[in-house]
Length: 617
Image 1 (cartoon, rainbow, N blue to C red):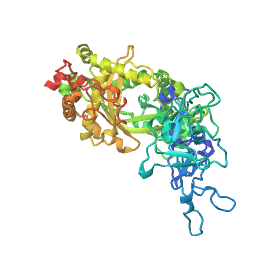
Image 2: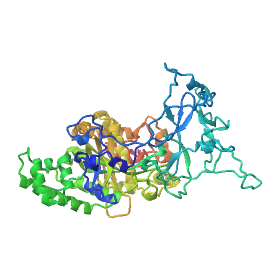
Image 3: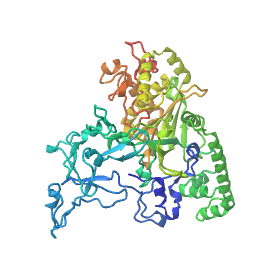
Image 4: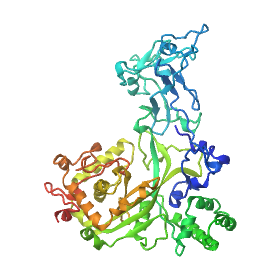
């Protein structure tokens, strides 16, 4: 298990973070409270480097779960969080023989040339307990096994018994004590864990254990250290497999980088000060502008750039960062609205920003598509910043319940781990008037039922209700159909393409109806130009046409088309794996809230699709 951020600080020489690993994203830094000075790229391990500060640095980990077992003899051993010893070591008596020969016979019979035991590497047990507040702990095997007999430290030894004949179902996995001969299947652990059953005579002192033990959440947070426990956790602990999907839900905030306006700044100067190693040093000394002259002089030793112009550009950019941070609001919808406005209004003739290059092509060249989209922009380069602010367990993250989010550190740090992805994309701005007209004519009764089911699912997960409008179904479904079609032509697999939906749902004056389809990766793969090329008018008209054909007919029709509630807990209408689903890494909504009838309509039930006329033409 990856250790907390305090342990990360110790891997840096003198607690000094190298400038090349720092990420600066003013908007993200301002909305994460308390404000962060920077984000940190996870260090890569380098055996050798010209910079001694970067050599042989690796991320810190702890050993969890602590309970391990030997695959030969079943011997169970509890290690420490920081233990390196993970080999089976059967206990000897004074005469040198095994204390429990029957239990460890397999290991005892394996000897090397010196007639000594060959010690097997231990394997982590696959069962842990978690609670919805984010705590995690080892399964209490001693208490689980010794329900009738008292556990005696140093004498009682646990043994893990797997199913015979390769049958490893939960009901055949068993843990027993070698001394007490008491044991139970682990399948029972998943039934009402944490509760006890009192005898019918009401005697509180005498309890009948039937696959249950009294156990409260320990509040354990092993990633923060040996004795880090939150006291008085009232949440009920749950038994899970350690690799189950609900053990860890990262809470990630992402952002499309919006460049700072630097009018009249030379392109070469802008590119120079944007280099990570240069801007990292500038940010580290931004509060000491008196040293800026000396710093720039040192940075320009091997450059012919004008020092005064570089200093002026730095001051303009620092001032722009301050203004941009003030304009940014800590609200997901308003945050995206800021991006939406910038993408719409950026001057396409301004190419001074190396971080975000946007081309606008006249809608007249897209011909019939101009009736459905107000603008289509081609993003030759963009930067996506993703930062992890915490994580949850058992239930996914809900913004309305921040108390269930566990921190990555014991004390607040001035940084968080993050990554930068560079890529390209196509931005579609839907025609707002056309959408309003379509919404007024579209029969949305089935979508209302889906919204109710979707919010019912959120209630079951202890999440707050979410308001969803019809145009979200439209924009989201169009995005999926187009990504599936683009993956055939642009050279990227569908898992390499992502969507970023801009759609307002709250009752506000802001109005958004757009989607950014983009590719982003940590290397140059995401910016090879294949996606932007397909955004050219001649190519995009063909791709949209082919995508709409798939909206008309699915290979599972008429079953897919006639279903008005399918998918995960009935949160989709006419949408399935054969026509509309994407890899989970590409979709923002986990393949929910999709409906092909919003695109192509349904003549049988009288639904008019948004692209109905285009399809007929």
